[in-house]
Length: 632
Ligand code: 6R9
Image 1 (tube, rainbow, N blue to C red):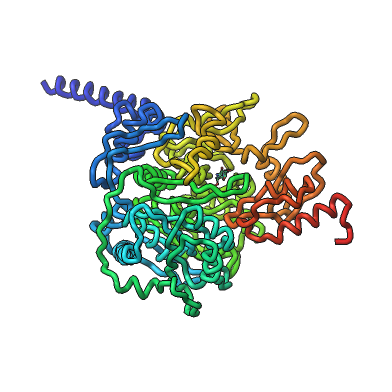
Image 2 (image 1 turned 90 degrees about the vertical axis):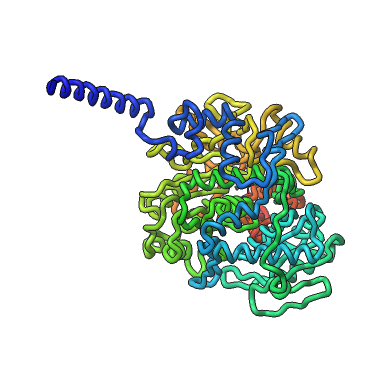
């Protein structure tokens, strides 16, 4: 009896062992799919990352339906997950659903953790950060929402916000969302003409600004720029002015002192039930042609997509401090400083300064002081800091860092390696995230992936859940025009007032696909590498070369801080260290092209340039190189 018992137990344990072993083999590495994404437990047959990815693209309705029901708070449920037709540029998600974005970003966290810090405002003056809890941010938002209503702003109106990163800017965005108005944030480095263009196109009656901005120790008269802009904007009836500095500014009848008036308002503001496809915001982005496009993002799909990518690309967990150093005036600020991070109940940093103020250690001193866990920045800043040497980084404790992110341009291998080895001490995954204003959120990035999956330097690598890339017009070697072959919830819905331009730009070049305007390669492992804008592709002796690849080589030279490669009909003979760059750090190649084509009378719209003088310097340098204009 006893031996029988022992025998059967042995049989039982050995069969269990075998089952466990099979289970591990079947799952590749042994991990629980719930650790990949809790929602995935309900997806039959999904047991690892690649299974989940396949499910997300093959069963896209089921995937997005489940995620939307679980991650967002709905006032009324949606009846249709998606209703999209690329041939008409029709993109609709979660129709029938009603929700309020500010409730998803604020109220529900106030219920569970009112004293959690929502925003850390890293002011220009180092060491003077201000922390705002979820409860405080909800109060600010409600007061502002009530003030906007008192000033006549209605559901469907569009409010232009011209402010540097600060809590009142975030509260302004959320106040619009709360009362059903759209916002149009204009980067507070744009000229009065660029601002006026955007106010006019958005038909705003209300502008919110600050008296002055402070950046890199310099005071900028933002209210004055608004005054100049609104002279040419008949739609504007009022300008709300917050006080960033103590200096008084001239106020007109049109101007409303923001803090003073909002303090008169109630801290409760009833959120409006918005349809999933109502407009959340417009965001203008310069096209390669000149006239900026007001891309339109809507409520539910955008919020869901930014929160999901924020959670899984950066492996963001409750309690982490998320440090994105972009400006709120760009899509990166909208999606990862504001909407994605707050929807996840995150603590998010608002960075007002520059990477080199008061010295090139600023980012890392801030990482130490705020104990930042995810740092998200631009290659252009990384390249700049790399040239100042490792000491500026090593002076500070960066042990809080878990993930490093890069966005905006291809990150060259030298900068990637430095970011990984020096900033991250070789222990943090670096996620090179590819996306656009048009895509709403990150579309290609090394994470999420299987645990421990490899990351190749300088490659965005893996499509996110629901993203199905396609390379068209391929010319052997796996390169081509990067398109996306099915809709995802975060994509832009139209260009404000120009739906035809929307379909022409994004859906007509490759019928049936969304065309990104970028070129990409796919490696034999299936990883994507972005090679830059397609209009920047250089053809040398019949070989298709990406600007990024050339710049990569030039940047290896220690004397070069940054470079931009462009194609023209002569040999490239030298390098410029002074580049026409936009305020977000992108090199304006169309300007360089005009210079080398000697077409300097037709440089086009330069309003987004950080330093317009750089163009003249490039022109002078180019003339010297060509041997003309030697005297200049
Ligand atoms: C998020 C953002 C979009 C354009 C995009 C591409 C370039 C962005 C990139 C990248 C290579 C990356 N871009 N991320 N290129 N690798 N990781 O920057 O939006 O301002 O609209 O610019 O930026 O050319 O098409 P946006």
